[in-house]
Length: 272
Image (cartoon, rainbow, N blue to C red):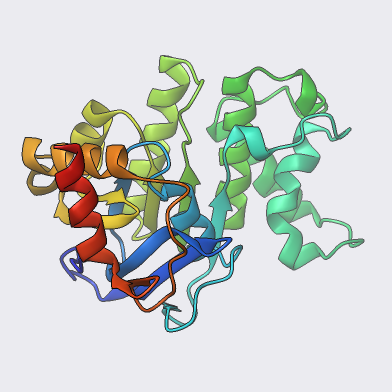
């Protein structure tokens, strides 16, 4: 299924037949569309729907199947914030150094930061309410404090496209409110923000655009049009019909010689 959000400012990222497979079983299947520049998009769907895989694909961290492509508009810088579970908090790193890593492309692996760069780091820490935490090891931070530090790192990266994977998971409501304010500020600045979320109320209140995934694209567009009971029910039904031991899928939409959509429809009918 191919749907796309309104193209108010031209595309930041365009997906062409995006298919990503693990051991040749699809995690994402034939997703096409675009994220408009300056858009604020929530990515939602059942567990295992391919949401994190989508973000990793956009960040260039997973290989695409053949005939799939992702086109980034030239000149736009990208920043990616993974889930907490993918971070190694045992590494002996101070909060200020963690944030300073956002300037990696400017300082290099062994370069020292200039006074203006350090001032940017301190300003970012102040913006997220972590002034005074500069020398604390990241391993001693609470989940909310760590997420604030990671948002400070995003601030100093100054990227045009920001990918957030479950950014408010295991974070207290006060921290979430502050980070959501930053996300809205990024959009006002014309940045493109794409966030994997699970809270439908949060999506409705703060994210004008939504992409609903169930390995395929169920709906993509204005949030009010996407978060309908019919679309959500279809996503749930597709999730219930998934068979992790099913036949291997190739990238042209064939599952051992059968069209993927036809086979999925058969599985959905069987579970009805």
